[in-house]
Image 1 (cartoon, rainbow, N blue to C red):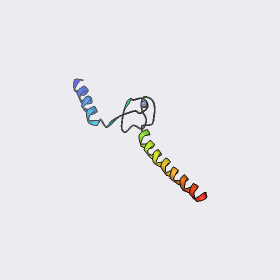
Image 2 (cartoon, rainbow, N blue to C red):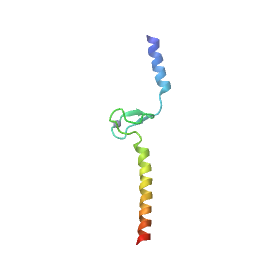
Image 3 (cartoon, protein in one colour):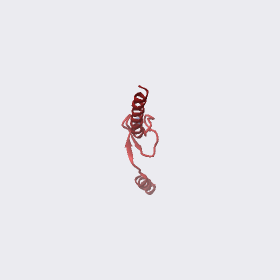
Image 4 (spheres, rainbow, N blue to C red):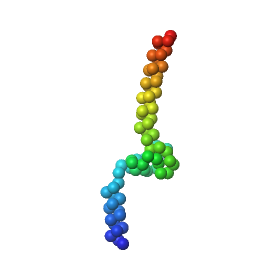
Amino acid sequence: MFFSFFNAGKMETLTTSVTKTCLNCSAQYQEHQQFCPTCGQSTHTHQLSIEHILHELFHAFTHIQTRVFSG
Ligand SMILES: [Zn+2]
């Protein structure tokens, strides 16, 4: 019993991946989890926001260009 308990603890430390903090509720979750186990918020919000900013910048440029060409 005790040995299995210690082994379980060892297993946990060995398999521990990167722990991250939810941007929405500040709960801890493992890096491989796609959604926060506490609030269900997508854990890729930060990555997506960077892509979103780049996307917005790209759109801003294309909008400026279309304005210049049309006007
Ligand atoms: Zn959360």
